[in-house]
Length: 87
Image 1 (cartoon, rainbow, N blue to C red):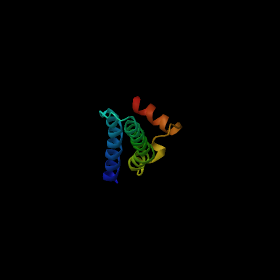
Image 2 (image 1 turned 180 degrees about the vertical axis):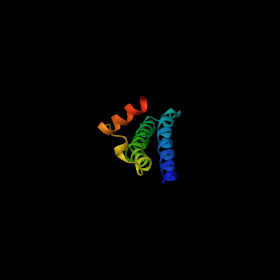
Image 3 (image 1 turned 45 degrees about the vertical axis):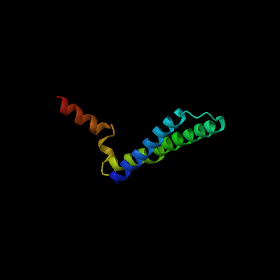
Image 4 (image 1 turned 120 degrees about the vertical axis):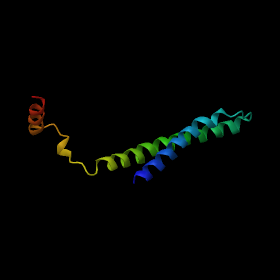
């Protein structure tokens, strides 16, 4: 799972950087330049969507799958533990 997350992260980051680099070419033809800009916008969009819909949820699941949520909830029991620990 860890390696899958890394592969998707690197792919999405590469798409974003390619999308930022493509419009910098020295193309003279305006129709080709418009197609390059359209392609770069799509690459950036797919990279961001991949990060948002794939990398972040997979990472969150991977990091939190074996944790107990009650350890992170601020309730009376945990407040009492904190008070005892600080005294």
